[in-house]
Image (cartoon, rainbow, N blue to C red; front, side, top):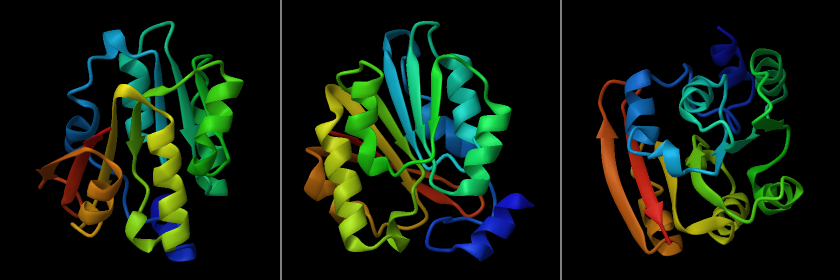
Length: 181
């Protein structure tokens, strides 16, 4: 219910009326070899559906930075997720570099993004993606889902490789972009 409330309260920040399905989650993080991941970053976790599943798979010595600007979602995440490996931030994803440095992490191995890029102003999209590219490890991956193909051209401009998948079992169905530099 909180998801629907937040969607109608702030459509420029919340891109869906319901949390993502576990089927979409598997398309997002299912291909990650967590045994090799030192640092994972999540942009726009909402209520933490993906976050909680990623935490279950993380190594004991891995770290995770979670960026959520919506105050209601941020508070919910802080209350529900208590794990010393996870830092939950009420900050914009643009600040990824600053917070990686604070956590003594050079780069992110993976960035999982649920940000509704299509509703963001162009400058914000550009800034977030520039920061993501700058702070992604050489062999890392930026994984983004969207409900349309609108972000395809933009992501192809920023990343050397963009692979596309589709999750029909989600409300609404979603496209998953797996991007590397």
